[in-house]
Picture 1 (cartoon, rainbow over the protein chains, first blue to last red):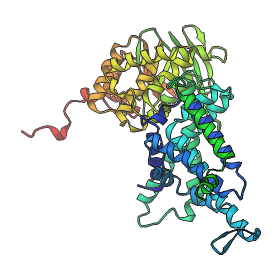
Picture 2 (cartoon, chains in turn cyan, orange):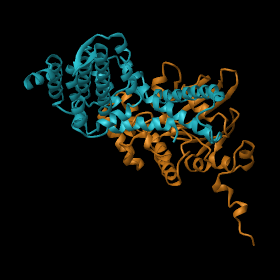
Picture 3 (cartoon, rainbow over the protein chains, first blue to last red):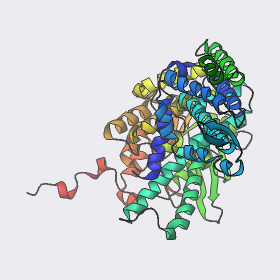
Length: 266
Length: 247
Protein backbone atom coordinates (compact mmCIF):
# COMPACT_ATOMS: atom_id res chain seq x y z
CA UNK A 1 0.00 0.00 0.00
CA UNK A 2 1.55 3.33 -1.01
CA UNK A 3 1.32 6.63 0.89
CA UNK A 4 -1.58 7.93 -1.18
CA UNK A 5 -3.56 4.74 -0.54
CA UNK A 6 -2.87 5.09 3.18
CA UNK A 7 -4.11 8.67 3.01
CA UNK A 8 -7.31 7.47 1.27
CA UNK A 9 -7.74 4.88 4.02
CA UNK A 10 -7.33 7.58 6.66
CA UNK A 11 -9.99 9.70 4.99
CA UNK A 12 -12.35 6.77 4.72
CA UNK A 13 -11.58 5.95 8.34
CA UNK A 14 -12.96 9.36 9.30
CA UNK A 15 -16.03 8.71 7.11
CA UNK A 16 -16.47 5.43 8.97
CA UNK A 17 -16.37 7.22 12.33
CA UNK A 18 -19.30 9.38 11.25
CA UNK A 19 -21.46 6.30 10.77
CA UNK A 20 -21.26 5.22 14.45
CA UNK A 21 -24.57 5.41 16.29
CA UNK A 22 -23.87 7.29 19.51
CA UNK A 23 -25.56 10.03 21.55
CA UNK A 24 -23.05 12.52 20.16
CA UNK A 25 -23.69 11.43 16.56
CA UNK A 26 -27.43 11.74 17.13
CA UNK A 27 -27.20 15.41 18.09
CA UNK A 28 -28.32 17.72 15.31
CA UNK A 29 -25.42 18.93 13.13
CA UNK A 30 -26.30 22.60 13.62
CA UNK A 31 -26.22 22.34 17.44
CA UNK A 32 -22.89 20.49 17.29
CA UNK A 33 -21.47 23.11 14.98
CA UNK A 34 -22.65 25.98 17.20
CA UNK A 35 -21.23 24.23 20.25
CA UNK A 36 -17.86 23.66 18.58
CA UNK A 37 -17.60 27.25 17.36
CA UNK A 38 -18.43 28.65 20.80
CA UNK A 39 -16.00 26.24 22.43
CA UNK A 40 -13.20 27.33 20.08
CA UNK A 41 -13.92 31.04 20.54
CA UNK A 42 -14.04 30.64 24.32
CA UNK A 43 -10.84 28.59 24.43
CA UNK A 44 -8.96 31.06 22.27
CA UNK A 45 -10.19 33.99 24.40
CA UNK A 46 -8.30 32.88 27.53
CA UNK A 47 -5.47 35.22 28.53
CA UNK A 48 -2.00 33.99 27.56
CA UNK A 49 -0.96 33.64 31.21
CA UNK A 50 -4.23 31.99 32.33
CA UNK A 51 -2.82 28.46 32.25
CA UNK A 52 -4.82 27.16 35.22
CA UNK A 53 -8.04 28.66 33.92
CA UNK A 54 -7.78 26.92 30.55
CA UNK A 55 -7.10 23.42 31.93
CA UNK A 56 -10.76 22.57 32.78
CA UNK A 57 -11.62 23.25 29.11
CA UNK A 58 -10.12 19.84 28.30
CA UNK A 59 -13.15 18.26 29.95
CA UNK A 60 -15.51 19.20 27.11
CA UNK A 61 -13.74 17.40 24.26
CA UNK A 62 -12.93 14.44 26.53
CA UNK A 63 -16.56 14.06 27.62
CA UNK A 64 -17.58 14.54 23.99
CA UNK A 65 -15.31 11.69 22.89
CA UNK A 66 -16.76 9.46 25.60
CA UNK A 67 -20.30 10.15 24.41
CA UNK A 68 -19.32 9.64 20.76
CA UNK A 69 -17.81 6.20 21.52
CA UNK A 70 -14.62 7.31 19.79
CA UNK A 71 -11.41 6.86 21.81
CA UNK A 72 -9.52 10.13 22.41
CA UNK A 73 -6.42 8.36 21.10
CA UNK A 74 -8.07 8.18 17.64
CA UNK A 75 -8.01 11.97 17.52
CA UNK A 76 -4.29 12.09 18.32
CA UNK A 77 -3.56 9.30 15.84
CA UNK A 78 -5.45 10.98 13.01
CA UNK A 79 -4.00 14.38 13.78
CA UNK A 80 -0.45 13.18 14.43
CA UNK A 81 0.95 15.42 11.67
CA UNK A 82 -0.91 18.58 12.67
CA UNK A 83 -0.53 18.24 16.44
CA UNK A 84 3.26 18.86 16.53
CA UNK A 85 2.76 21.92 14.31
CA UNK A 86 0.17 23.28 16.71
CA UNK A 87 2.53 22.59 19.59
CA UNK A 88 5.24 24.60 17.82
CA UNK A 89 3.10 27.72 18.09
CA UNK A 90 4.56 29.88 20.81
CA UNK A 91 7.83 27.95 20.92
CA UNK A 92 9.74 31.22 20.76
CA UNK A 93 7.79 32.88 23.58
CA UNK A 94 10.27 31.82 26.34
CA UNK A 95 13.02 33.72 24.48
CA UNK A 96 11.11 36.98 24.24
CA UNK A 97 9.20 37.00 27.52
CA UNK A 98 11.72 36.21 30.24
CA UNK A 99 10.05 37.96 33.19
CA UNK A 100 9.40 35.51 36.03
CA UNK A 101 5.73 35.54 36.94
CA UNK A 102 5.36 32.49 39.14
CA UNK A 103 7.36 29.90 41.05
CA UNK A 104 7.15 26.12 41.14
CA UNK A 105 8.76 25.44 44.47
CA UNK A 106 11.84 27.63 44.28
CA UNK A 107 12.13 27.54 40.47
CA UNK A 108 10.98 30.70 38.76
CA UNK A 109 8.78 30.21 35.69
CA UNK A 110 8.86 32.95 33.09
CA UNK A 111 5.80 34.42 31.43
CA UNK A 112 7.12 33.08 28.10
CA UNK A 113 6.97 29.48 29.32
CA UNK A 114 3.45 29.93 30.71
CA UNK A 115 2.20 31.58 27.51
CA UNK A 116 3.84 28.89 25.39
CA UNK A 117 2.09 26.10 27.29
CA UNK A 118 -1.21 28.03 27.26
CA UNK A 119 -0.95 28.50 23.48
CA UNK A 120 -0.14 24.81 22.99
CA UNK A 121 -3.14 23.79 25.08
CA UNK A 122 -5.40 26.18 23.21
CA UNK A 123 -4.29 24.67 19.90
CA UNK A 124 -4.64 21.08 21.07
CA UNK A 125 -8.08 21.66 22.62
CA UNK A 126 -9.36 23.42 19.51
CA UNK A 127 -8.08 20.62 17.29
CA UNK A 128 -9.69 18.01 19.55
CA UNK A 129 -13.03 19.83 19.37
CA UNK A 130 -12.82 20.28 15.59
CA UNK A 131 -11.98 16.62 15.07
CA UNK A 132 -14.87 15.63 17.32
CA UNK A 133 -17.22 17.59 15.05
CA UNK A 134 -15.73 16.07 11.88
CA UNK A 135 -15.78 12.54 13.33
CA UNK A 136 -19.41 12.75 14.39
CA UNK A 137 -20.87 14.75 11.50
CA UNK A 138 -20.66 14.01 7.78
CA UNK A 139 -19.65 16.70 5.30
CA UNK A 140 -23.23 16.61 3.95
CA UNK A 141 -24.66 17.22 7.42
CA UNK A 142 -22.29 20.13 7.96
CA UNK A 143 -23.34 21.61 4.60
CA UNK A 144 -27.01 21.11 5.45
CA UNK A 145 -26.45 22.88 8.78
CA UNK A 146 -24.67 25.75 7.02
CA UNK A 147 -27.54 26.03 4.54
CA UNK A 148 -29.94 26.19 7.47
CA UNK A 149 -28.22 29.31 8.75
CA UNK A 150 -28.47 30.79 5.24
CA UNK A 151 -24.86 30.28 4.26
CA UNK A 152 -24.78 30.73 0.43
CA UNK A 153 -25.54 27.37 -1.18
CA UNK A 154 -22.84 27.87 -3.75
CA UNK A 155 -20.26 27.98 -0.92
CA UNK A 156 -21.55 24.83 0.74
CA UNK A 157 -21.61 23.01 -2.62
CA UNK A 158 -18.04 24.15 -3.24
CA UNK A 159 -17.01 22.93 0.21
CA UNK A 160 -18.64 19.53 -0.32
CA UNK A 161 -17.17 19.06 -3.79
CA UNK A 162 -13.72 20.01 -2.49
CA UNK A 163 -14.02 17.46 0.32
CA UNK A 164 -15.15 14.79 -2.15
CA UNK A 165 -12.48 15.78 -4.65
CA UNK A 166 -9.62 15.15 -2.21
CA UNK A 167 -10.18 11.40 -2.40
CA UNK A 168 -10.47 11.53 -6.22
CA UNK A 169 -7.12 13.30 -6.39
CA UNK A 170 -5.55 10.83 -3.96
CA UNK A 171 -6.88 7.90 -6.01
CA UNK A 172 -5.14 9.31 -9.08
CA UNK A 173 -1.90 9.77 -7.09
CA UNK A 174 -2.18 6.19 -5.77
CA UNK A 175 -2.72 4.72 -9.26
CA UNK A 176 0.14 6.69 -10.77
CA UNK A 177 2.49 5.87 -7.89
CA UNK A 178 1.71 2.16 -8.24
CA UNK A 179 2.28 2.31 -11.99
CA UNK A 180 5.61 4.10 -11.39
CA UNK A 181 6.90 1.68 -8.78
CA UNK A 182 5.95 -1.37 -10.82
CA UNK A 183 8.38 -0.13 -13.45
CA UNK A 184 10.98 1.24 -11.05
CA UNK A 185 11.54 -1.55 -8.54
CA UNK A 186 13.74 -0.82 -5.56
CA UNK A 187 13.35 2.94 -5.86
CA UNK A 188 12.26 4.86 -2.80
CA UNK A 189 9.74 7.52 -3.70
CA UNK A 190 9.62 9.10 -7.13
CA UNK A 191 12.89 10.15 -8.68
CA UNK A 192 13.31 13.89 -9.03
CA UNK A 193 13.72 13.56 -12.80
CA UNK A 194 10.14 12.24 -13.02
CA UNK A 195 8.52 14.87 -10.82
CA UNK A 196 7.71 17.25 -13.67
CA UNK A 197 5.94 14.71 -15.85
CA UNK A 198 4.34 13.04 -12.81
CA UNK A 199 2.81 16.29 -11.59
CA UNK A 200 1.85 17.33 -15.11
CA UNK A 201 0.10 14.02 -15.73
CA UNK A 202 -1.56 14.23 -12.32
CA UNK A 203 -2.99 17.65 -13.11
CA UNK A 204 -4.20 16.54 -16.55
CA UNK A 205 -5.74 13.33 -15.22
CA UNK A 206 -7.36 15.12 -12.30
CA UNK A 207 -8.79 17.74 -14.62
CA UNK A 208 -10.18 15.04 -16.93
CA UNK A 209 -11.69 13.21 -13.99
CA UNK A 210 -13.13 16.40 -12.51
CA UNK A 211 -14.60 17.30 -15.92
CA UNK A 212 -16.19 13.84 -16.25
CA UNK A 213 -17.68 14.09 -12.75
CA UNK A 214 -19.02 17.55 -13.48
CA UNK A 215 -20.56 16.38 -16.75
CA UNK A 216 -22.18 13.50 -14.93
CA UNK A 217 -23.67 15.97 -12.46
CA UNK A 218 -24.86 18.31 -15.21
CA UNK A 219 -26.62 15.44 -16.93
CA UNK A 220 -28.59 14.83 -13.76
CA UNK A 221 -29.84 18.36 -13.46
CA UNK A 222 -27.09 19.85 -11.28
CA UNK A 223 -27.52 23.63 -11.22
CA UNK A 224 -24.79 24.69 -8.83
CA UNK A 225 -26.41 23.65 -5.58
CA UNK A 226 -26.59 20.25 -3.92
CA UNK A 227 -29.62 19.20 -1.92
CA UNK A 228 -28.77 17.57 1.40
CA UNK A 229 -30.83 15.06 3.33
CA UNK A 230 -32.86 16.68 6.11
CA UNK A 231 -31.43 15.41 9.38
CA UNK A 232 -31.82 18.52 11.48
CA UNK A 233 -34.53 17.09 13.70
CA UNK A 234 -32.88 13.81 14.44
CA UNK A 235 -32.71 14.54 18.15
CA UNK A 236 -35.20 16.94 19.66
CA UNK A 237 -33.05 17.40 22.78
CA UNK A 238 -30.02 18.48 20.72
CA UNK A 239 -30.43 22.15 21.44
CA UNK A 240 -31.11 21.56 25.14
CA UNK A 241 -27.83 19.62 25.39
CA UNK A 242 -25.99 22.24 23.34
CA UNK A 243 -27.29 25.15 25.44
CA UNK A 244 -26.36 23.42 28.72
CA UNK A 245 -22.85 22.79 27.35
CA UNK A 246 -22.53 26.38 26.12
CA UNK A 247 -23.53 27.71 29.57
CA UNK A 248 -20.96 25.42 31.22
CA UNK A 249 -18.27 26.50 28.76
CA UNK A 250 -18.96 30.17 29.43
CA UNK A 251 -19.05 29.48 33.19
CA UNK A 252 -15.63 27.80 32.92
CA UNK A 253 -14.35 30.84 31.06
CA UNK A 254 -15.36 33.35 33.73
CA UNK A 255 -15.03 31.22 36.87
CA UNK A 256 -11.53 29.94 37.60
CA UNK A 257 -12.32 26.40 38.79
CA UNK A 258 -8.73 25.34 39.68
CA UNK A 259 -8.26 28.54 41.75
CA UNK A 260 -11.55 27.89 43.56
CA UNK A 261 -10.59 24.25 44.28
CA UNK A 262 -7.21 25.47 45.49
CA UNK A 263 -8.80 27.98 47.86
CA UNK A 264 -11.00 25.19 49.29
CA UNK A 265 -7.92 23.11 50.03
CA UNK A 266 -6.33 26.03 51.86
CA UNK B 1 -37.61 10.16 -31.88
CA UNK B 2 -33.94 11.10 -32.11
CA UNK B 3 -32.68 12.81 -35.23
CA UNK B 4 -29.11 13.77 -36.05
CA UNK B 5 -28.49 15.69 -39.26
CA UNK B 6 -25.04 16.45 -40.68
CA UNK B 7 -23.38 16.13 -37.29
CA UNK B 8 -19.73 17.19 -37.36
CA UNK B 9 -17.45 17.49 -34.37
CA UNK B 10 -13.89 18.79 -34.20
CA UNK B 11 -11.24 18.96 -31.50
CA UNK B 12 -9.67 22.31 -30.68
CA UNK B 13 -6.65 21.41 -32.84
CA UNK B 14 -8.93 20.96 -35.86
CA UNK B 15 -9.00 17.13 -35.86
CA UNK B 16 -12.41 16.04 -37.11
CA UNK B 17 -13.91 13.36 -34.83
CA UNK B 18 -17.37 13.03 -36.35
CA UNK B 19 -17.86 13.52 -40.09
CA UNK B 20 -21.25 14.67 -41.25
CA UNK B 21 -23.26 11.95 -39.46
CA UNK B 22 -26.97 11.67 -40.12
CA UNK B 23 -29.38 9.12 -38.68
CA UNK B 24 -32.79 8.75 -37.09
CA UNK B 25 -33.84 6.58 -34.18
CA UNK B 26 -37.56 5.90 -33.80
CA UNK B 27 -39.29 5.84 -30.42
CA UNK B 28 -38.84 2.51 -28.67
CA UNK B 29 -35.97 1.40 -30.89
CA UNK B 30 -32.89 -0.24 -29.35
CA UNK B 31 -29.87 0.76 -31.41
CA UNK B 32 -26.38 -0.61 -31.01
CA UNK B 33 -23.55 1.77 -31.76
CA UNK B 34 -20.48 -0.24 -32.62
CA UNK B 35 -17.00 0.55 -33.80
CA UNK B 36 -13.35 0.05 -32.93
CA UNK B 37 -11.57 2.07 -30.25
CA UNK B 38 -11.41 5.74 -31.21
CA UNK B 39 -14.16 5.37 -33.83
CA UNK B 40 -16.14 8.18 -32.19
CA UNK B 41 -18.84 6.28 -30.27
CA UNK B 42 -18.43 8.13 -26.95
CA UNK B 43 -17.95 11.45 -28.76
CA UNK B 44 -21.23 10.90 -30.60
CA UNK B 45 -23.11 10.14 -27.37
CA UNK B 46 -21.60 13.16 -25.62
CA UNK B 47 -22.40 15.38 -28.61
CA UNK B 48 -26.00 14.27 -28.42
CA UNK B 49 -26.17 15.64 -24.88
CA UNK B 50 -24.47 18.92 -25.65
CA UNK B 51 -21.31 18.00 -23.73
CA UNK B 52 -19.21 18.49 -26.85
CA UNK B 53 -19.77 21.32 -29.30
CA UNK B 54 -20.88 20.13 -32.70
CA UNK B 55 -22.09 21.46 -36.00
CA UNK B 56 -25.33 20.11 -37.39
CA UNK B 57 -28.73 19.48 -35.92
CA UNK B 58 -29.65 17.09 -33.08
CA UNK B 59 -33.24 16.84 -31.99
CA UNK B 60 -35.19 14.76 -29.50
CA UNK B 61 -38.91 14.44 -30.16
CA UNK B 62 -38.70 17.50 -32.37
CA UNK B 63 -36.91 19.52 -29.71
CA UNK B 64 -33.65 20.82 -31.14
CA UNK B 65 -30.54 20.62 -28.98
CA UNK B 66 -29.68 24.21 -28.12
CA UNK B 67 -28.95 26.19 -24.97
CA UNK B 68 -32.63 26.92 -24.44
CA UNK B 69 -33.69 23.27 -24.61
CA UNK B 70 -30.63 21.75 -22.97
CA UNK B 71 -32.17 21.29 -19.52
CA UNK B 72 -35.35 19.71 -20.95
CA UNK B 73 -33.36 17.37 -23.17
CA UNK B 74 -31.04 16.29 -20.36
CA UNK B 75 -34.08 15.56 -18.23
CA UNK B 76 -35.47 13.41 -21.03
CA UNK B 77 -32.22 11.57 -21.78
CA UNK B 78 -30.34 9.37 -19.30
CA UNK B 79 -26.65 8.79 -19.97
CA UNK B 80 -24.70 5.93 -18.43
CA UNK B 81 -21.04 6.90 -18.53
CA UNK B 82 -18.25 4.59 -19.65
CA UNK B 83 -16.50 4.85 -16.28
CA UNK B 84 -18.85 4.27 -13.34
CA UNK B 85 -16.39 5.97 -10.98
CA UNK B 86 -17.20 9.22 -12.72
CA UNK B 87 -20.92 8.62 -12.37
CA UNK B 88 -20.96 7.76 -8.69
CA UNK B 89 -19.67 10.82 -6.85
CA UNK B 90 -21.83 10.86 -3.70
CA UNK B 91 -20.85 8.93 -0.55
CA UNK B 92 -23.60 6.31 -0.71
CA UNK B 93 -25.50 4.59 -3.52
CA UNK B 94 -28.83 5.99 -2.33
CA UNK B 95 -27.43 9.56 -2.27
CA UNK B 96 -26.34 9.16 -5.87
CA UNK B 97 -29.68 7.72 -6.88
CA UNK B 98 -31.72 10.58 -5.45
CA UNK B 99 -29.33 13.25 -6.74
CA UNK B 100 -30.93 13.48 -10.21
CA UNK B 101 -34.63 13.32 -9.24
CA UNK B 102 -34.16 15.86 -6.43
CA UNK B 103 -32.45 18.25 -8.84
CA UNK B 104 -35.52 17.96 -11.03
CA UNK B 105 -37.80 19.02 -8.22
CA UNK B 106 -38.98 15.67 -6.83
CA UNK B 107 -39.16 15.54 -3.03
CA UNK B 108 -36.42 13.56 -1.32
CA UNK B 109 -38.90 11.09 0.15
CA UNK B 110 -40.42 10.36 -3.27
CA UNK B 111 -36.99 10.13 -4.86
CA UNK B 112 -35.88 7.64 -2.20
CA UNK B 113 -39.01 5.57 -2.77
CA UNK B 114 -38.35 5.56 -6.50
CA UNK B 115 -34.72 4.64 -5.89
CA UNK B 116 -35.71 1.71 -3.69
CA UNK B 117 -38.13 0.44 -6.36
CA UNK B 118 -35.41 0.69 -9.01
CA UNK B 119 -32.87 -1.16 -6.88
CA UNK B 120 -35.47 -3.84 -6.19
CA UNK B 121 -36.21 -4.17 -9.90
CA UNK B 122 -32.51 -4.55 -10.69
CA UNK B 123 -32.08 -7.10 -7.92
CA UNK B 124 -29.50 -4.99 -6.10
CA UNK B 125 -31.56 -3.76 -3.15
CA UNK B 126 -28.67 -4.67 -0.84
CA UNK B 127 -26.55 -1.88 -2.31
CA UNK B 128 -28.87 0.89 -1.13
CA UNK B 129 -26.87 2.08 1.86
CA UNK B 130 -23.47 0.89 0.71
CA UNK B 131 -20.67 3.38 0.34
CA UNK B 132 -19.70 3.88 -3.28
CA UNK B 133 -16.00 3.30 -2.73
CA UNK B 134 -16.72 -0.13 -1.28
CA UNK B 135 -18.56 -1.40 -4.36
CA UNK B 136 -16.94 -3.84 -6.75
CA UNK B 137 -16.62 -2.87 -10.43
CA UNK B 138 -19.74 -4.84 -11.34
CA UNK B 139 -21.80 -3.49 -8.45
CA UNK B 140 -20.73 0.03 -9.32
CA UNK B 141 -21.80 -0.48 -12.92
CA UNK B 142 -25.23 -1.79 -11.90
CA UNK B 143 -25.62 1.07 -9.43
CA UNK B 144 -24.67 3.56 -12.17
CA UNK B 145 -27.42 2.14 -14.39
CA UNK B 146 -29.79 2.36 -11.42
CA UNK B 147 -29.00 6.06 -10.88
CA UNK B 148 -30.13 6.76 -14.43
CA UNK B 149 -33.22 4.54 -14.25
CA UNK B 150 -34.39 6.40 -11.11
CA UNK B 151 -34.69 9.50 -13.26
CA UNK B 152 -37.20 7.62 -15.46
CA UNK B 153 -35.69 8.84 -18.73
CA UNK B 154 -37.56 8.57 -22.03
CA UNK B 155 -34.30 7.85 -23.85
CA UNK B 156 -31.20 6.10 -22.59
CA UNK B 157 -27.69 6.42 -23.95
CA UNK B 158 -25.35 3.78 -22.60
CA UNK B 159 -21.60 3.84 -23.08
CA UNK B 160 -20.05 0.37 -22.70
CA UNK B 161 -22.67 -0.78 -20.18
CA UNK B 162 -21.36 -4.34 -19.92
CA UNK B 163 -17.73 -3.39 -19.31
CA UNK B 164 -16.44 -4.71 -15.95
CA UNK B 165 -19.45 -6.96 -15.43
CA UNK B 166 -19.15 -10.63 -14.55
CA UNK B 167 -21.27 -13.08 -16.62
CA UNK B 168 -24.08 -13.13 -14.04
CA UNK B 169 -24.37 -9.35 -13.79
CA UNK B 170 -23.97 -9.02 -17.55
CA UNK B 171 -26.90 -11.39 -18.07
CA UNK B 172 -28.89 -9.47 -15.48
CA UNK B 173 -28.15 -6.20 -17.28
CA UNK B 174 -29.12 -7.63 -20.68
CA UNK B 175 -32.43 -8.84 -19.23
CA UNK B 176 -33.06 -5.42 -17.72
CA UNK B 177 -32.19 -3.57 -20.92
CA UNK B 178 -34.59 -5.81 -22.81
CA UNK B 179 -37.52 -5.00 -20.54
CA UNK B 180 -37.07 -1.25 -20.06
CA UNK B 181 -39.51 0.22 -22.55
CA UNK B 182 -37.52 3.28 -23.59
CA UNK B 183 -35.53 4.25 -26.65
CA UNK B 184 -31.91 3.18 -26.23
CA UNK B 185 -28.61 3.73 -27.95
CA UNK B 186 -26.00 1.32 -26.65
CA UNK B 187 -22.36 1.97 -27.54
CA UNK B 188 -20.41 -1.20 -26.97
CA UNK B 189 -17.64 -3.55 -28.04
CA UNK B 190 -19.63 -6.40 -26.55
CA UNK B 191 -21.19 -7.47 -29.82
CA UNK B 192 -22.93 -10.45 -28.25
CA UNK B 193 -24.74 -8.12 -25.90
CA UNK B 194 -25.59 -5.77 -28.77
CA UNK B 195 -27.00 -8.72 -30.68
CA UNK B 196 -29.18 -9.69 -27.73
CA UNK B 197 -30.43 -6.21 -26.92
CA UNK B 198 -30.62 -4.27 -30.18
CA UNK B 199 -32.68 -4.73 -33.30
CA UNK B 200 -30.64 -2.20 -35.24
CA UNK B 201 -26.92 -1.45 -35.39
CA UNK B 202 -24.97 1.59 -36.53
CA UNK B 203 -21.35 0.81 -37.33
CA UNK B 204 -19.00 3.77 -37.24
CA UNK B 205 -15.37 4.04 -38.16
CA UNK B 206 -13.20 7.13 -38.11
CA UNK B 207 -16.20 9.27 -37.24
CA UNK B 208 -18.25 8.16 -40.25
CA UNK B 209 -21.24 5.85 -40.48
CA UNK B 210 -20.09 2.78 -42.36
CA UNK B 211 -23.23 0.70 -42.01
CA UNK B 212 -26.70 1.15 -40.56
CA UNK B 213 -29.17 -1.71 -40.59
CA UNK B 214 -30.59 -4.80 -38.96
CA UNK B 215 -28.42 -6.07 -36.13
CA UNK B 216 -28.39 -9.63 -37.41
CA UNK B 217 -27.31 -8.51 -40.89
CA UNK B 218 -24.43 -6.32 -39.76
CA UNK B 219 -23.22 -8.51 -36.94
CA UNK B 220 -23.06 -11.57 -39.16
CA UNK B 221 -21.04 -9.81 -41.88
CA UNK B 222 -17.53 -10.98 -41.03
CA UNK B 223 -15.81 -9.00 -43.79
CA UNK B 224 -17.54 -5.75 -42.86
CA UNK B 225 -16.73 -6.16 -39.18
CA UNK B 226 -13.10 -7.08 -39.80
CA UNK B 227 -12.61 -4.17 -42.20
CA UNK B 228 -13.69 -1.91 -39.36
CA UNK B 229 -11.53 -3.36 -36.63
CA UNK B 230 -14.15 -5.70 -35.15
CA UNK B 231 -14.80 -9.44 -35.08
CA UNK B 232 -17.91 -11.57 -35.36
CA UNK B 233 -19.81 -11.91 -32.07
CA UNK B 234 -18.69 -15.06 -30.25
CA UNK B 235 -22.10 -16.67 -30.66
CA UNK B 236 -21.76 -16.34 -34.43
CA UNK B 237 -18.10 -17.23 -34.71
CA UNK B 238 -18.66 -20.89 -33.85
CA UNK B 239 -16.18 -23.09 -32.05
CA UNK B 240 -12.63 -21.70 -32.31
CA UNK B 241 -10.18 -23.92 -34.22
CA UNK B 242 -7.97 -24.59 -31.18
CA UNK B 243 -10.94 -26.06 -29.31
CA UNK B 244 -12.01 -28.40 -32.10
CA UNK B 245 -11.24 -32.03 -31.35
CA UNK B 246 -8.85 -33.68 -33.72
CA UNK B 247 -10.35 -36.64 -35.56
